[in-house]
Amino acid sequence: MNPIVEFKNVSKTFYTKNGPFQALNQINLAIQEGDIFGIIGLSGAGKSTLVRCINYLEVPTEGEVRIAGRDLGKMNQKELRRQRQEIGMIFQNFNLLMQRNVLDNICFPLEIAGVKKADARKRAEELLEIVGLSDKAKSYPSQLSGGQKQRVAIARALATNPKILLCDEATSALDPTTTKAILALLKEINQKFKITIVIITHEMAVVEEICNQVAIVDAGKLVETGSATDVFSKPQTEIAKQLVYKEEANQLEVGGKRYVRVVFDGNSSFEPAIADMILNCRVRVNIMGADMKNIDGKAYGQMILQMPDEDVKAQQAIHYLEERNIIVEEVTAHGNTGTH
Image (cartoon, rainbow, N blue to C red):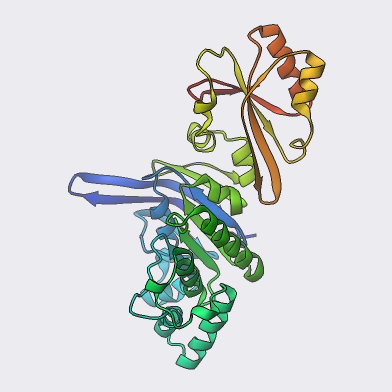
């Protein structure tokens, strides 16, 4: 099956007064139709440049961006405009037209596409119902809450029946409760209309809540990709571990000799493995922190344990867990790990 979005050796260099700056470096990435794909990284990692290459708002310096197998770099301006109508986009700051009411904001991309006014209004009314704002058609953006503004932005992005929806830090300006509601709406849209959603974010909670696939970007390079479950339960690179376990160092007490991280997958997360280990190995452990999450309908979790200082006892306990196919990693206060 061909991916709906494909990057082939994509690089992007910006030329500034201080010299060239490489924002993307040899990106190879495939996003399948129907995915909710999260692209995550620290500030300045290149996430927004990457997403803007998907609709060619940023033209790569080298490499190919393909949408449904078609190379955007080989399209003329008319073909590119038509292609962009199949790619909706929502932003952190909503980008609504303040002088237009809600209904007219949603109609705007349809006007540009040449849709008849009556048809555009009918489509806008349908979309308002989908995003739960039928009663706000005549309201202006200044009269709406942040969550309502983002719902309008989502409706507007869906106006031209796109196959792909790009979300660039779309929930960063919202409070946690509103964020959950917006993410639930995006998931519903993905399932109902089979729209591929690409989410750019620096917030781990957003990816955990909604994404089934994840890519991690660091300094313009793609450093890790995979299912959300795999990346979050078994991060491979240091930047991935830094993002996934960013609170971990604060959990480790100064003076402890040996710590391990115990990672549970969806099958083992409900078994009393730690209690069984303590009873069978006769060891005392200190639980420094624990975290459980639900990613794509699958539960997983991790615990940070302070192990006995006695190496034989500690190794016996670790071996007990490993025999039960539970991942155990040594952890230091500086975040360094080593998988057994």
